[in-house]
Length: 210
Image 1: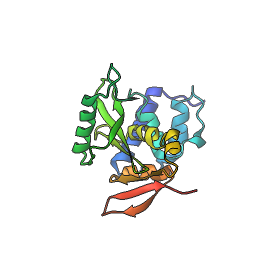
Image 2 (image 1 turned 135 degrees about the horizontal axis):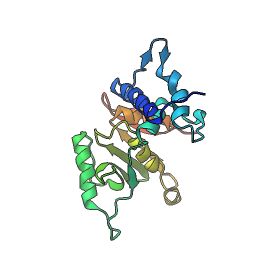
Image 3 (image 1 turned 90 degrees about the vertical axis):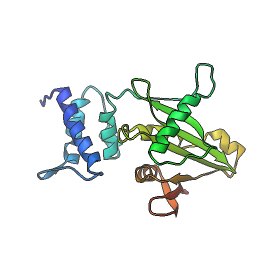
Image 4 (image 1 turned 135 degrees about the vertical axis):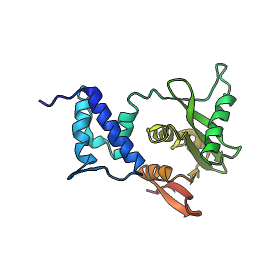
């Protein structure tokens, strides 16, 4: 029976994942075998106590996020202070990250979620907005926290409007102004399509109609 120290397995997989991200999503090749060949083996060794259905892990980013977040204690929470009021310091922190990433945020955006690391520092957030029956959102993650699945966690929390909004606005539409190629890929994996292209790296995206 194959036996491998769990720490070693984690270290090996971290190398694969970081190599993958640092090479702009190019496959990492080892002789005749690509990283994808080793995925089930390393996953089964590292997560042997947990029953993981490999078929449920859809892409390489999912594998990497699973491992890179194992020891990254990141909390996703609503941006309210102890009195239940909007935490404006948190809003300022996320907007600063957006400015550092050259992501424009208009004043009508409402901070809906923040991501904090294990030290309580804000490393990302998500904004939502509703105007003229159009729902939109923005997901922002710091450069240091990028590529670790945090953006995906934030996105999955804001990608769908609350059901109450559909009751209030029967013609509600979801449109997103995307300026990050990585975000574009994440949205495409979740059923969004480009409905308009603006410039070299800017897209208006909306869920595909069924």
